[in-house]
Amino acid sequence: MFGICNLAIVPVRSEPSDRSEIVTQLLFGEHIEILERHNQWAKIRIQFDDYEGWVDSKQYQVISEANFNQLSKEAIILNADLIDYITAPDNLLLPIPLGASLSFLNNSEINVSNFDFEGTKTSGIKPKSALINTAFMYLNAPYLWGGKTPFGIDCSGFTQMVYKLNGYKIHRDASQQALDGEPLSFIEESEAGDLAFFDNDEGNITHVGIIMDNNYIIHASGKVRIDRLDHTGIYNPELNKHTHKLRVIKKII
Image (cartoon, rainbow, N blue to C red; front, side, top):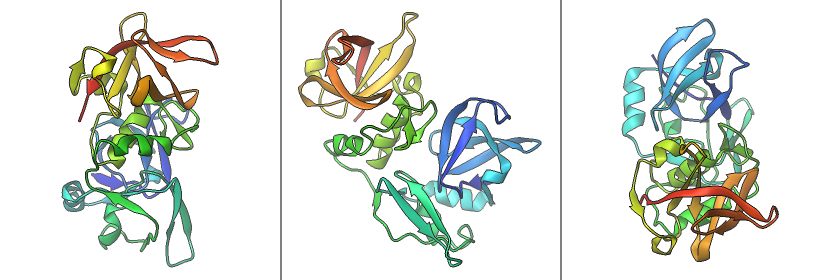
């Protein structure tokens, strides 16, 4: 079975329970493969990044395999504003966040609700220099484990969405993202838009941020914020200490 998210933001959980932690979110228009069912719950795989988790089966619309494959081939079209609205003939207004997918709206077999969108769209591959401008759209978004929107986002959801809005596909988790790209030896070799990864005392990658010019970094920690970056890691001037230990810098594009 296959489906598409027809609500603004849907939690994807680690286990089939409302009490289970949110590991990521489905945004409006993202399409999924349904791997198994357990009572009201469905285990899904998100087509964009192959991430798996459990969603309430009342929170997606079933689509055919042919429509799933068609969507997977088509160019990704995304909402480019912080928040906008989907409209429907019955005067319905459905708010959708930055990065929601709009590719299916022209497909009458999927768009059975006759959803319409008149806001700003983005698609295609943008230059690397555009990444930081996109990142600024999330500035001050509160940190939320598993989040992918300006209303709550985690460190790797932030980097994934910034890259996605500019036409690039990277994995969902920081530890997965760290496997991609070309490692750089020094901060001085990096350029705006590269990713910096940070590890914990056990050596596991637990944090990621986007490098800016002049040894700054934008990342989600408490909120999406800008801090100094040096060879030790991230320096937080409010706390007057380093908060994250630098492991590696990667040039993804």
